[in-house]
Structures are given as structure tokens and as C-alpha cells.
Length: 417
Image (tube, rainbow, N blue to C red; front, side):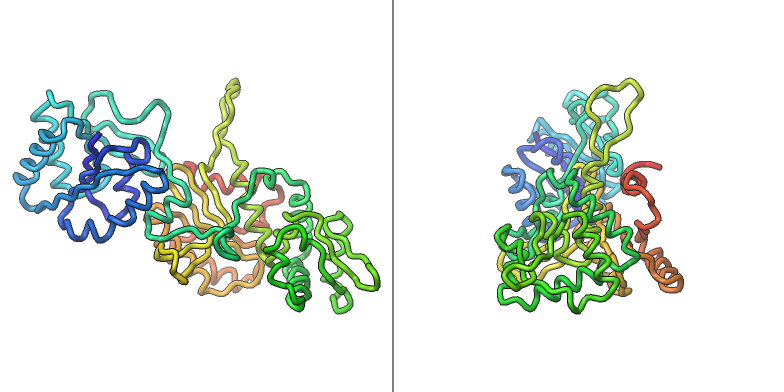
């Protein structure tokens, strides 16, 4: 198959069809061959590399003020490649008209014209022959890794670099220990961060501090002292201990803290990481509504999700320039970039969220600022005003008394209201 894509600066608009079926070649049609190659050549190679495919790319430059030249070029293309499919999701209006004229002029060639509604993944049959490249209910999808790659970055994983993106297996989704931690966090009267900071401060004084959170289960037991803990810190840590998520006991004259599992330790490795993990869990478990008598397995709301995503911003392994986003969710071609704050918030974090979402999610990315604790009224109003100016949604997680309510709110970021 030969896909003819009318060039757009949005990479999603340029590759909707390629996310459903891998073509033999893509012919990009725009106003500057040099610009098209500069912007997208390397990104497309990365994208198709992730899908283990090799696709020939052809760039055609046309003058939008010369419609006859566009018609002649499309005539030549459809003669040269008898399997042309035109994706008109984006592109110059003159080129769209030219494609329509060729399709109408030569019906015997069976030229396919379509465009996508990116927000809901549906396809519009523009040539009105009742046929499209969609296979049944299949819609275009893109993974978190792919959307980052298409926008010039690369996800760094923790098997490559300490502090990189950790890939959870599905056991975390229903881990009762994480449920207990989340309940304690919500009931902590905003003292969770202070308690976790105290634990981390104790660990930071150990000679093997860098191995505690990166060395596996053999480092689940660490020297620890509650002597300098405030009453609020003791209250939180005792609640965690009462649920047997940690033990604090004297061993041979040394007080030791033991994490109940590697997952519990990870959930306590940063002050705000538990909020990130909880939103990730709720998103992964979210299901689409079903009709009353529908017995088929429910469809997942989000087709991909990652948490603690470390991004190499220029996509090269030797690069030291990185950004981190707390949670990224995908539904089809839509991305949700979530920055989680479980304590004090600096206004520059809002600008950072907007910058990262725009750069690595593109024009269809939705930036969300998730607050785990309530700020004072004046600061909250200031944050909301700035967020509104940058088209950022503020998610006040503490307003939702149940996980189901919070999960339903996450669904609204990608589903029609």
C-alpha cells in the first residue's frame, strides 16, 4: 500500500493511517521538501523501528498557489502507484481539493480518500465508496513510547539508568498493600510528605544509600531511628506499621526498619510517588461502560499508561538532557500528561507541565495538574487562574471520597462528557 499524507507539523495528523496498517511507502506532500525531511525523517525512523517495520518515505514539494501542478502530481502518483490511499486528516486546502479532483476524475483507479477524527479515533470515508482501511472496530492507537519518539524524545528505563522509568507488572493494580498505603496517605491530614521525608532523610545518611531504592529486595531492611520524629510523623509511621507495611524493631541493639515488599518500598521512595502510582493504577483498571446485557470483556479506557516517565529530550542515548512527567496516559491517539503534586507547589511547575506536554504530546495532548493535598485558598485560586490561562486542567484528588469517583474523573479526560 502507498499512503499519501498531506504534510502537517503535527506528527499525529501525518501518521493516523500508519498506526492501523504499515504501508510499503508513505508519500508526504507539503510546501517544502527540506522542511519535511528536517522535521520528521529521524522521528519516523524511530517510530517504525519501535513497530519493527521499515517504510519507504518519499517527499513531494508543491506550490499551494498552483492547483494545476498539484492535480498533475497526484495524477502521476496514482499512475505510478496503483494502490494509493490519500489520508486527508491534515494538510493544505489546495492539496485536499486536488486529491478530491483526481479521485472524481478517475473513478476506475479506485483511489481511496479518508480523514480521521483524532479525538475519537473514527474514520470519515471522503470518497463515499463505503470502504476504508479500518479493519472492523479497529482504531488507530499509539503507545507512550511511540508518542515520545514521534515528538523527538526517548523514554529512558531503569534498566538503562538509575532513576529511569520503571515498568510495573499488573500485580500492582490490585496489590492490597498499596491500597493500605493510599488509605493512610489520604487520612494523614497532609502529614504524609513529612513522614516520608523523615524516612528518606534517615536513609540518606547511610553509606549504601544509593542502593536502598535501586538494589532490590536484599536492601529492604535499613537502620532507622524514630528518636527525632515529630508527633505527626510518628502518627503516620505508626499507621503504616500497624498495617504491617513496615516493621521497626531492635536487632542486636540497632533499630531496623523493614519494608514489607519491594512495591511498598517503591511507594515510599519519594514524597509524592504514591499519588503518581495510584493514578496510574486507577487509569489502568478503568473500563468502558457496557450495555446491560453485554457479556463481552469490557474495553479498557486507556490503551497505554506509564508512570515516572523519564524522557531523553533529544532522543539520543548519549544525551544528558532529560525531563520527567509523573503519569502519561493514552487512549488511541489522545495523550494525557499528568504532573502530580502532593505538597507545596511552585508556579514554575505549571509552565514545565505545559512545555513538556506540548513538546512530547503534540497538539492533542491534555495537560493535567493533580493535587494530592489542599493548598490555602489564595494560592489555590492563583494556581487555577494560571492553569486556566495555559489550558491545564487542575485535578483536586482530595475532593473524591472514593477511588471509583476519582477513576471516573480520569475517564473524562479522553471520553466525551
